[in-house]
Image 1 (cartoon, protein in one colour):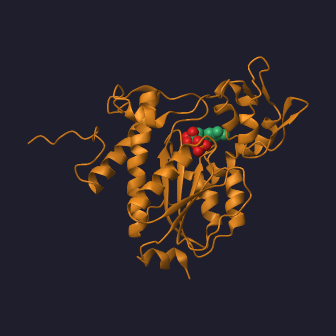
Image 2 (cartoon, rainbow, N blue to C red):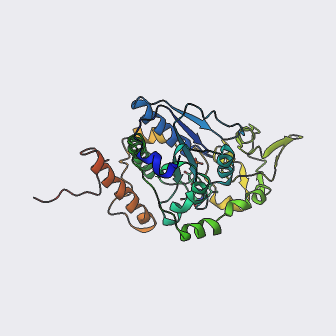
Image 3 (tube, rainbow, N blue to C red):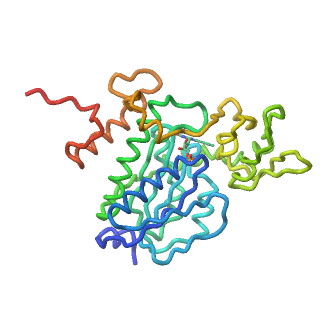
Length: 318
Ligand SMILES: Cc1cc2nc3c(=O)[nH]c(=O)nc-3n(C[C@H](O)[C@H](O)[C@H](O)COP(=O)(O)O)c2cc1C
């Protein structure tokens, strides 16, 4: 079957969806859970297979749509995830991609370039980009985290509906994307940086959450001392979830973000309006305006009267 053409015209409702996810600090996993919930509401079971820390392949039989979820690392698909998907050798499957990143810059759009090449024998139904908070560089304000979460809930609903209806939402890749994807393969330095990882002895309580959670098995305990090897994937899980904020993360130390995001609590917090980015936003955060604006337009178009506050849309004067 020539998937790129044939699958897109087949409009059979999927019977079962499998969401295969890599997620260092759980943002992408949360988006997978959103997808799963939306599919479930459409009476389509959607299982999540979290590849973190496993070499095991998921059983693919019985799934007619596969979702592949990853966090963007330096404008690319994480190497760990690329290698994993390559080993799955997906053929003649309907596949969609969902990815999360901290900002919406043009470069991030190129991130699926290598992944799409691996999926050449499949029908790629979409490449959906979700903004979720940075787990590196700096921590976003709670109100922006709430806004990202609320938009992700809604956008995943639209994406799930698109996938079920067989409509294709796709980024076209060109040489420029290849170039961006190539020069920013910073993750290849991860193995080196991992060696500069360590813990602040006065803070570390030896709870071993880092050791147990490391998806690459890069952390070991020998003679009561934590050791870090050459297999670091730079996913930030160890430093992000360290309850004592004791991790030292090599040359990324100044960019460390510690402590989980409390998405659901923030969503329920009425003191936050979830409109951190709006038409009056200035400075650094201005780059976010087009992303939220385009989603507002999409929501208003697809779910009349149900756009999230439709904060970028002023009523047309009569
Ligand atoms: C090593 C590394 C590189 C990153 N590179 C980018 C990037 O190029 N662009 C971006 O917007 N966010 C970048 N981020 C932020 C993550 O993509 C973002 O926080 C994502 O939602 C994390 O997902 P996770 O919680 O599923 O791991 C990077 C994070 C890490 C750890």
